[in-house]
Picture 1 (cartoon, rainbow, N blue to C red):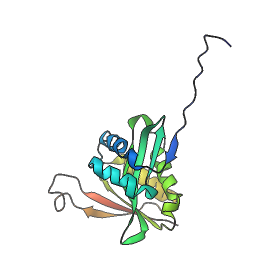
Picture 2: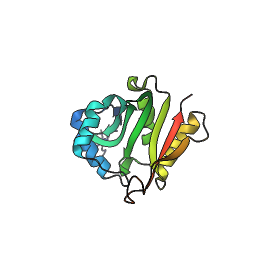
Picture 3: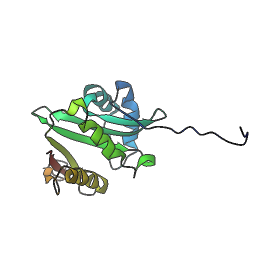
Picture 4: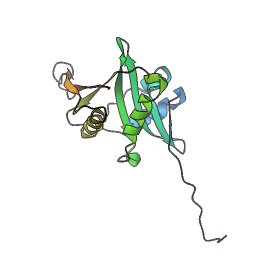
Length: 170
């Protein structure tokens, strides 16, 4: 073996449901993913504990690079509401967000889901592209859209309107 040769071991991206111990890493990831709204670390801990079956994270070398939080709506358990999609800047442009969404949809926690909902602000081009692509792949030109939380009425002008995006699965 040539002593000048450096052997590099390829790392592999691991997709898995989160654990409560992932909550702080998820919180830090989201904080670095503007324009996402940050929640408390406690909220992220609860997502990783109470909603683990409908959330998914991606890690490489024990570092969280992506996270999708979702839950089944208590009033409509056939609907999966995607709360946040966060991808570290180093992993963007590699379809990681879509891979995470697909992993959730194919997991036992999403069995029987017939509708996907999320909310997106008008200026979040990455989320529009992600969910428009998902809608197309599910046989729809685009998902249904309407304002769920209005900038003035609900946010007092401090936040852009949140548009509900609804995709019916085939």
